[in-house]
Image 1: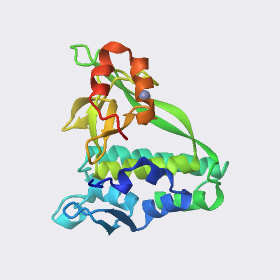
Image 2: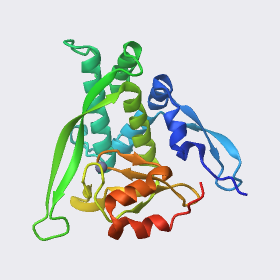
Image 3: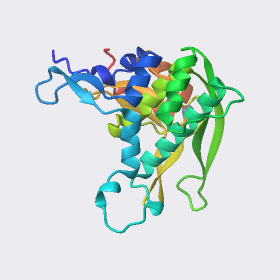
Image 4: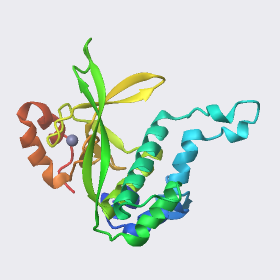
Length: 256
Ligand SMILES: [Zn+2]
């Protein structure tokens, strides 16, 4: 009876955004229509522009602390925000380079580079950017070894912008996930790590993403970005084999 589905948590809502709507969210304050946490009624909330918001999360508060700290030695306050900001900044530069081959950018603020890309490129224009994957060998063992692999991945422009919107929104409001104790069926990656206080904290990359009702609405791989909806859960289970995924898959509701 209770309709608590968050429109924004729904992958379809994000998939409906076009290049210009994504650009607006990344660069300008925008309106989110989502249920109020107490009443459940859909309310409109003004959201900050995502890229400046992420930049503030990297260095936030440093300017306002005053004091004698050197501005040349600004330290990021959030490793996670820094990683994501640098990744998107780099990918915007790569998208710009492919939209303006052989030219040199005259601006360096990512929002302005992006506005130039959006002005000339088509929705379905193919853009190749480097995607970093953290890889591990012998995870959890004494000789565990971490490294970062950068691979070129091709996206349409609109898919790339939706990816950035989703990554920044999920940075501020992480989806509830449940780990699947198996490697991704698409890329084979099982573990990644986030840096916290100089330590590598490993986490599984192959997960169920759960909506507000704690129903599993998607299987996702944080390494390759692969995504499988409920209609493909049986396929994923079959790909994984009986032993690992089946117990997890059967305890999620089968009704949509
Ligand atoms: Zn994967």
